[in-house]
Image (cartoon, rainbow, N blue to C red; front, side):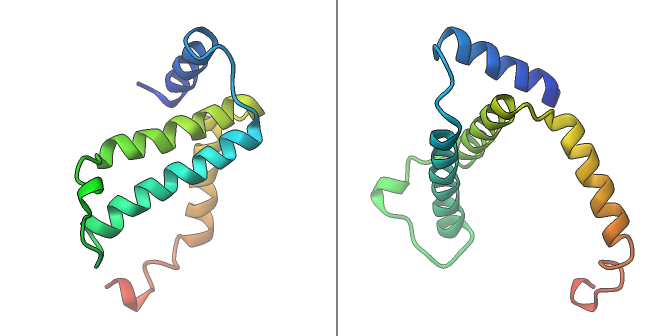
Length: 108
């Protein structure tokens, strides 16, 4: 699935199953919540924290998909074409950092 197709599928789902989009501010708060849930799994899987019994049923891929879902909702609501935005962002990073990371002794 392309990013454009994902944006369309989420939009179709929202307009049929979901009835309508939550407000942009509500979705921003939900995005923050979902990122927190992802961070919790990351901290316990790759960091120093141990899992609690309530964390054991969490799924890393599902939490990442939740973050992506809400980000797509926000993009749809605000008229952002994520394909174009990502392409421009990659170009920006490439131009800005083309030598920076190659010359970073910490990365070698």
